[in-house]
Length: 183
Image (cartoon, rainbow, N blue to C red; front, side, top):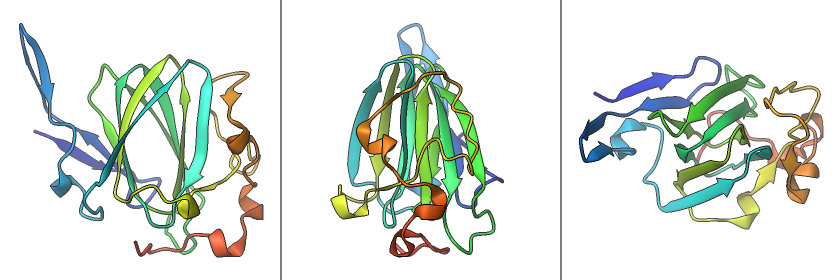
C-alpha cells in the first residue's frame, strides 16, 4: 500500500512511498497518482534530469507551479525551503536523501524553494503541474548563510544561473510567495 507522509518541517510537502511489486522478471512501481496530492493539480509536463556526482541544482521556486520528484538512479540530497510569507513553517529548511534503489518521491508545492545535490551520478524524473513559464522561474542562493544548508558535498558544480541567485533577504518583494499559495 502506498504511504503518503506529511513533512512536519514544511507545510504541504509530502513524501511518497509507493508499492513495489517484483518477481524473477524484475519489478513494477506505480510512481504517481493524482489522488495522492490533494493540493496538487493534474501534472501536465514530465521532465528528466541527469547530473553527475558533485552537482548542486537550485534553489529554484515557482509562484504557480508544483513539482513531484522521483529518482530513478543514484543518490541525491533534496533541499526544500519554505519561502511563503504567512506559512506556519516559513523559512524552515527540510533535507532528505532519496535513492533510486528505494521507491520514494517528494511533492513540492508552489512557493517552496527546491534544489538537490548529487551524492552520486543521478537520473531524476519529475513532473510539474504547469507548462514551463520563464516568468515563473525564480531562485534563492544555494549558499545563503542565513539558510545554513548542508548539501553533503564539497566543491560543488553549480550553474551560472544558480551562482547568481539572490540571498533570501534580497528577494524582490514582488517575487516573495505568500501562504496560502493560489495557483
